[in-house]
Length: 454
Image (cartoon, rainbow, N blue to C red; front, side, top):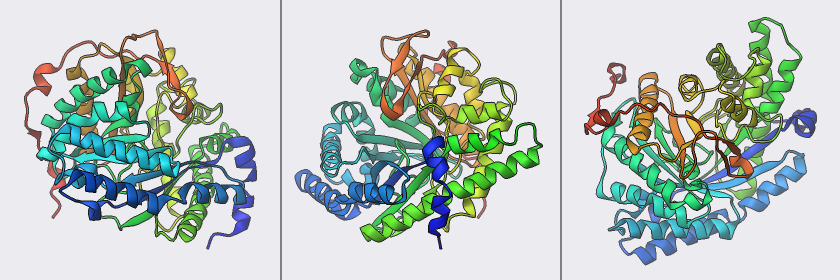
């Protein structure tokens, strides 16, 4: 049982340390909407989303007001659309119709993002999968709130390099389609290895096929709370450092557990999981990089940064799992460059490089996230970056992802401005040596030997 007194204890965290419930995400299955007629399919999708999630925003606001903890985002995730649209969609243009339907439903219920414009192609692609992937540049350019994710690999299946190579092209085409808005379409597109079925965070959220018909997942966040707690133990041993993070994560996650239970009860929808990730924002003091600096680094990216992030990720998980009956999603620390003011600053002065970020993804909760690169970087190089990150996830049996933004018309030294939670940052340099012969080989990288556990 979560006691009200536990929430009152967090007053200081909310008022001075940027504690918030980052998102209440309603997952909705669209499997019962499948129809061979595209018009009927779109009608069913719109009706189900609106009927299920009509009160999501108002309930989130009510709970936040009652307990004094802001709920920043209310979102919806749906069944991967490639599965839902396969019977009706014969071309990429048909899938764009579904994207527009999702966008219209999201606007009607007032959520800021809707995820699930997705395909799971870690082992191979059906015609529907390929059509959806080919539709992504247009779909993300004509919609405002739709987010897309593609699963390219897993520890059990290996890496689908045909899909990796294709996604290199798709990222570039998406950037071109939205070049008038600093290529913002790529900020709503992410590729995964080992994606979880219950992730409430965008752009990677989708409602997995193992999930129930409708579910409430909550993502909590409190980088500022953790940083403030660490200021009180400067110079102490690693034992004290770890214990401080763990205790703080416990308190933060208890807030998420309470909100998840309340939202579940008021919406009459089952409670799924609490994702106890530390997700930064561009706000001052709400930064993962600031936590790393408080642990002893001059800037994020300095030697020792990967070890510091490993400590943070592990202790957040250890504290969080004791605070909630169901923990899931990504659960750890995010390192999105444009969304973290101090991370972006470290990148601009050269303390944090793309290669160092890749090393950090071995121990963070997701991967290379919200990284702006020059618009002239070839699609094959982007595919190589994706392949590297998929390999880290596959071999280490963890979720990894890439959300990279080639900003058309901009180069190293320029800045990109997305606004809101997406933030801003300088353009990061990319290794100029090519990998085209590698990524053009085609086929699938086999799963590692430790995947065979039956």
